[in-house]
Length: 107
Image (tube, rainbow, N blue to C red; front, side):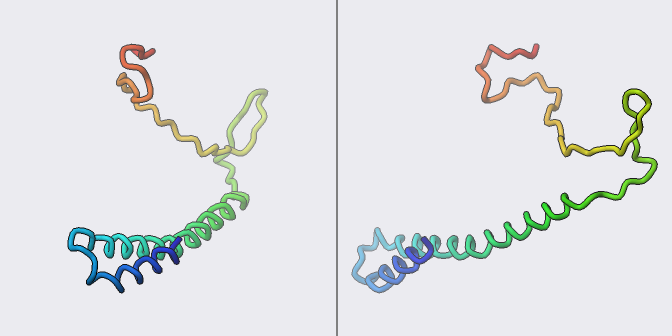
């Protein structure tokens, strides 16, 4: 796709003097498309490397100290496990944008 923007930019820049004044914004559209394509070519590999590093870090076993143990049922002790879950409930009674107004289950 980036190559397409580069070709389009080359064509539009070549014929820009014969273009009417009200369509010369095509040059900027092609330039912006090329710029965003180049940014994507840089950013996607960066993002993949970052996600791979995070996955590798999560896969390594954590060191557990004696104070992190939690007593379960039956008096069995084990290491505390962090599930990573974070609640998004703010306690607000506002109706969500996905709910039908007037039919909220909260009161």
